[in-house]
Image (cartoon, rainbow, N blue to C red):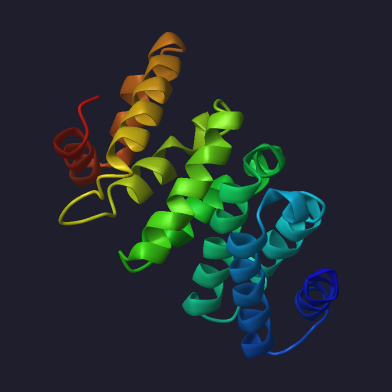
Length: 188
C-alpha cells in the first residue's frame, strides 16, 4: 500500500492533468476505507495538505468535490490528525461540499468531516455560515446518520455564538432564506 500512496501523493503534488489528480484523489479515498488508521495515520497530515492545496487549483467542480470527499474519508479514518488542519480548510470544504450531489459519498464525507470537527470543536466558529449552508444542502431530507450529528454541532456552535454575543449578527448574515431553512431543518 505504501508505494501506491506515495505514487498517488506524487501525482497530486506535481503538476499533472485534472484527470490524473482526480484519479489519484479517488485512489487515496478508496485506500482510506480499506486499510484504516493503522496505515493512514502515517500519511494523514501529508495527505491533508496535499489535498487541501489541490482544491483551490482544481480545474472543475468534480475534482474539487472528489478531493473534498477524499478529505472526508481520511477524516473518518484519522479524525484527530485531520482535526488539526480544519482551521485551514474547513470553510472551503463546507462550501465545496454544499454543492455536491446528495449521495452516499457525500454522507460518508460529512460523517468523516464531523468526526474531525468533534476533535477540534471550536475551530470553525467563524465559518458558521458555511456550516449552515452545507448542513442545509441535504434536501429534501437530511440522512438519518447525519441529523443528530449536525444538530449537536449546530446547538454547540449556537451556544458559543450566543455567549459571545454573535448569534443574532451571525443569523442575520445568513440571509433570510438560509436562516429560515436552518430553523426549519434543525431544532436549534
